[in-house]
Amino acid sequence: MKTKIWIAGIVVLVAVLASAYYLVEKENGGVNEENTNAMVNIALYINFNNGTIWNYTLSMSQKNATVLNVLLTAAHKGGWDVDYTYYGQYDSYFVNSIAGEGGNGKYWIYYVNGEMGEVGADKKMLYEGDEVEWKLEEFS
Image (spheres, rainbow, N blue to C red):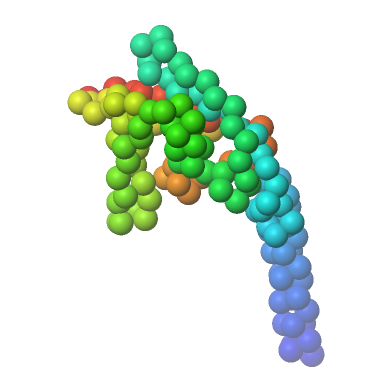
């Protein structure tokens, strides 16, 4: 009897976890085989914090739509450079400069839909209609 109750409990737990995963993926637009080839439109703003803001609207495949890839695509399109460094301890990239701007106490920080990024730019996936802003911010 105890074994049947234990098995039933595990089945219920698995069902609850699977449902929660499905709901989270659905809310986030989930990257899966059905939509990895889908194209998404992303708005990109590069704010130099000196009154200059560059605007780009980019369309790219969902599977490649990361904050870093959007920035690099815009750089290629606009003919300017992005300098970035890979840090193995974080398994991620850090953007040092955009169009030659950055450094000397000024750092590029990205925001998605108004919220500061919490992971490396190469790890943050983007979805249809997302707005990305890179801001050159000063820290002392």
